Image (cartoon, rainbow, N blue to C red; front, top):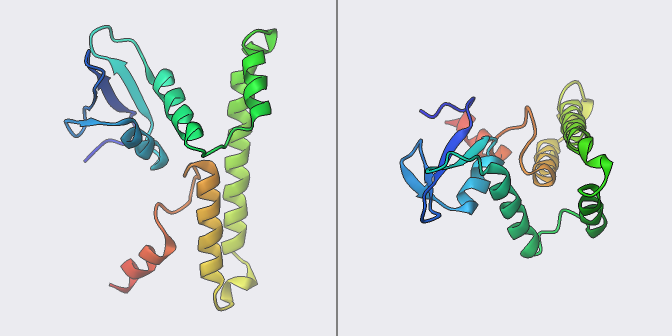
Length: 163
C-alpha cells in the first residue's frame, strides 16, 4: 500500500521517461496530474544528477492544460506573474499565492460543511444531488484540492453504503 504522507517519488531517466518508484512503471505527465488531483504530492528528480525537477514539470502540466483551452489563469494574472519576476515583489509572491490558495480551500471547505451540517434543507428531497453538484463544482475549481471532501462522486458512496 503506498504511503501517501510522503511525496510520490518520480525519477526522470536520461531518456526523459518518468518512472513511478511506488508502482515500478513508467508514467506520463497526465498520470502525474492525475496523482496530484487525487491529493498526492509528487517529487520528480533527475536520476543521474539528483536535481529536483518538480517545479519544471508542474509548470509544464499547467502549460499543457492552458494550451488545450483549459484556461484557468487569466492573461492579466500571467502578465503580472511575469512582471513580478523582474521586481522586488518576487520575494513575497510565493507566500502571497500560497496563503491565497489556502484561504480559498478553507472557505470552500467551510461552505460545503455548512451546506451539510445542521442545515434544515438537508431533509428536502433532492438536496443530496444538489450538494453533490456543488462539491463537484468546487473540486473542478480547485483541481480536487479540497480538505474534507469525498474522493468520488456521491452516487458511488451511496451505492457502496447499499451493499
